[in-house]
Length: 143
Image 1 (cartoon, rainbow, N blue to C red):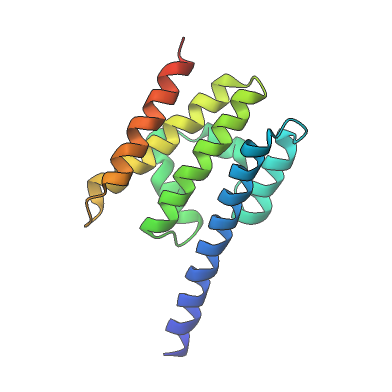
Image 2 (image 1 turned 60 degrees about the horizontal axis):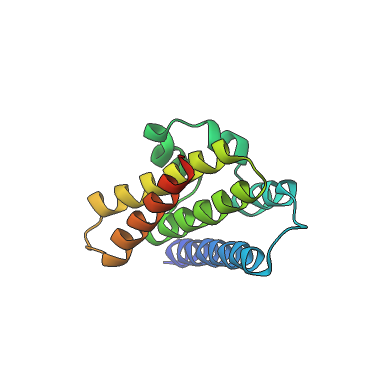
């Protein structure tokens, strides 16, 4: 029973960390984020998620879910927040004129959401709308 409580606390803490990171990235975008360098974002990925963003960019899309699940005990809600984090990070990469990396991160966000839509017990209209929005953003960056 104690071990289960410990695991639940760990899962809740991970969810809180992900939510804080997403809020931070959204805040950067809303404030303009011009002074924030990609190095700070990369450091935040490393410190908060224990993920090297360059490694994440290099991972083939087909291996992404396995990589994320192996890295941490991510639940569906965690993966959805990670997709949102990747979307916000992609927007930041576009702002810093690193469009290839941004498109890569956007595609990975879409992969996560499509995975969740396919394998989740729950149908989510919100996920479908995000997938459409992310695809629209990606399409506008393909030109």
